[in-house]
Amino acid sequence: MVVEGVSDGVDAVLVAARTRDDPVPCPLCGTPASKVHAYHGRTVADVPVDGRRVVLHLRVRRLVCQVPGCRRQTFREQIPGLLERHQRRTVRLTRQLSEVTRELCGRASARLARVLATPISRSTALRLLRRLPVPQQPVPPVIGVDDFALRRRHRYATIIIDAETGRRVAVLPDREAATLEAWLREHPGAEVVCRDGSAAYAEAVRRALPDAVQVSDRWHLWRNLCDKVLLEVRAHTGCWATINPPRPGGVREQSTLERWNKIHDLLGQGVGLLDCARRVGLALNTVKRYARMPEPTTLRIAPIYRPTLVDPYREHLRARRAADPAVPVTHLLQEIRELGYPGSANLLVRYLNQGRAEGDRPVTTPRHATRLLLTDPRHLRPKDTALLEKIAAACPEMTQLATLVGGFAALLTPAAGNDRKLTTWIATARSAALPHLHGFTNGLELDRPAVNAGLTLPHHNGRTEGVNTHTKRLMRQMHGRAGFDLLRHRILLA
Ligand SMILES: [Zn+2]
Ligand SMILES: [Zn+2]
Image (cartoon, rainbow, N blue to C red):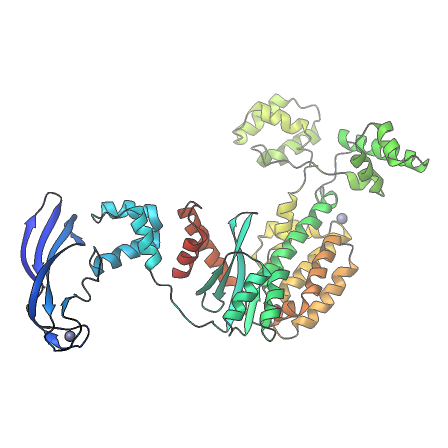
């Protein structure tokens, strides 16, 4: 181009330019043509200068092809690399704005573009975004399949990635077996498929790629186990929560004991459950719960308290009250205030009335106890290790649970022979009185070949995790309003 002049518009820099006088090959026959038939003006936007828009007024030629017999008598010259046919922006400006839309999507791109002195509308931004090409590459040998929520609990989609590099391969609009099966048939080539424990994916892969190795993802296996462990720990709260000796004869405990006796007396006399509920004045479900308990002690559930400001002075309070049971609260308050207690008198009184100073508070919550059980023992602090030992020793079931968790964790480092060890593990788990864990072992048995592959082969689905985090960020940015097609486009562009 030849720049013929630059002038100062009100809010833009105006550049007048023309093409060179060089001959240009005819698009049809390729013979260089230089005879001008007419001139045209094109007005396009270019990248900004000095924070101002740049408007380019460009004069282009319509040339005459003088080759006899060429059906193209005249043609308008193009400027490849600078300006494309029918475009209102230079190639470099379009490239910059497209990159902005790739990161920010519609609305935010439009806002940023205005600040950058290259204003575009929201719909233009979306058009630029949709025009960005999705990289086309062959199906990788090891793929990972996972689902993610489009709307939590309502709509899910499926993402397929290269399990080795994390590259996005495809996004499917649901998590049905048929959809995945159809995609796998259209895109063959995968030899290993990593997936979660879902039966739909397993079925789709089995039908479309019967020779592919299915790998049940270790992280999903572990998470399933974690859920079951929490249920078991909860069921045994009565065993471990009051590892400290319980307060003798608390109000609640006495009433549960009385109720248990009353209900079991009535049931022993042959009274029906419903009648029994009517006579003791309790809900039918409550009566059923009592009826199921072989002993009254299993009903004792320790109250769960949140930590309070008084906790650090518990030892002091306990020692003082043991030495002098009649010590007034005001004295205790003054003493612990001198030790640094920042709380109120009320808080202390409530604490003492709840009997928390005397040590029948639960050692921790079921969730925390579960976390201790599930943490690699090498990463526990000494304090937690001591607590874990107590929790694991609370009852035979908790001891077995702790051993089983450790055993399964060891299997999660893939190694030959883990499949045989898993058989032993399942047998041990089934022999323990841990019903929730039995459900977990049933799930393992149903998907056994894939689980074996997951525990012996190095492949895993870990990279979908990062992809899904990124997807969530994209969806938040789009406020959940953009269509699935746009979302898919953006996921694949990443
Ligand atoms: Zn020609
Ligand atoms: Zn127990």
